[in-house]
Image (cartoon, rainbow, N blue to C red):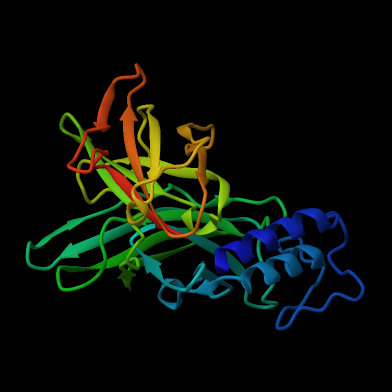
Length: 315
């Protein structure tokens, strides 16, 4: 899939990264549509080339484009140029209009998705990462955030996305830009929710598109529904452990060995190990434990004998 190609591209860049302390005008480097100068606000030739190549692996979301102070353009991208239910990475860049080169000093804050429920005449948000941040030192001019949509666009309602941007002290906004959120294909269910007392939590599976047969890192985020519900749902402050029991429902519910639970990481994610022995539909049954080890969600036995809380991933 395209995500796997992006991973390989990032790995290659990490091995071939150039020194970023040059004068910004390296001999032999030409980038279509970009003028490289000694402008300290912008990328060096090597940095700009790496950013340009990365942006060729993603697609722009035109409705999220904005202009700041008539001097800068800000663009947003996703892997496919679309959004879908569950976890979506969003990449932001700012460019100087005079040269089209990428600017390193900018910030994206206040990322706010809103669903307008037409018939119910109410709005709600969805899980978000927070502010966009540099995600790879080889791309200092590209910021990444994520949004995990809990439902698709359709007759029930429509989504908008807003954010604030600061480019070299100039400020701008995208205010309730209309976006479309698609359903995932059959055999893919990457977002689930559970309740603990009166609180609702969302489990966003982040990297299912990267998986292959064999051992894989499984990465997810746990977000907590906000009050009011129009406020983006931030990462939960509570700590959990997520036990996984992967099964193949189309193959007699056989499992796989050497799986490890998802545990909290320093970056706010949860990570574990999942071993997929063959291609096809995998139903990953989940048991959620609190910091004391008590089961707070999942772990029940439905008619099949497995937890009713699960992700579906088809590889």
